[in-house]
Image (tube, rainbow, N blue to C red; front, side):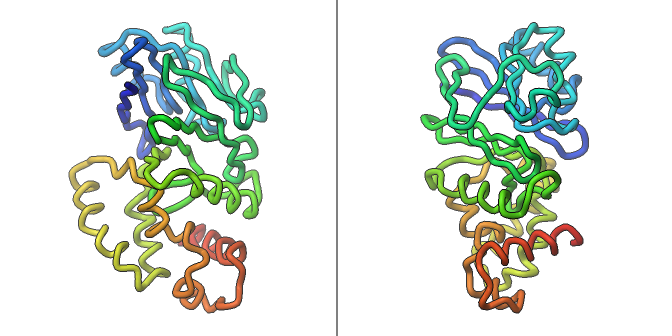
Length: 254
């Protein structure tokens, strides 16, 4: 059985500590900051076999080197980021499979936010770690890739089984909710989430994980074919790609 612990880091980042009960293997995903990650690792396991990075940005790799030095861990990342992820040991490619103990994940190449962004999909557990590509009710900014790449990457994640749980890289849900409500005016399911999200944030609790099925119904960036959203944007004849691009532009200045 794979246990997952959410570690809040920096202002709003999430790192994820994975523990395979069958083999005692331990891994961490996107260790933003050494101190909060090390505190929990040292207290619970005093070992760390692997460090997995979804992409090269500092707020996802900031704890790499110190954790590697202390625990003699192996760092895994995208082949495109092999020169940009500190201390990388193992290069990962699209559709490659890797195991954390007995828990196997598939590498999904999801560029857009960065050129080398990847996700980690654990099929048996039905969980996916999406970094800064797919968030609860939102998606990442496009820094190095293109809007087309980000749109395709979101569709790749959207095609995963409906019950797949999403663990994303940051706690941005409340701000994303405000944006979704502005342009998805008639979404009753979205409106029902308001109190739940506000309660979580006020209690300093994470709003993740969330399911692919729930995101399909409430995340505006996964609903670019919805007529009411097209109407709200005055783009009734636009393609899904064009709707996505418009929404991404609007969100950048929101």
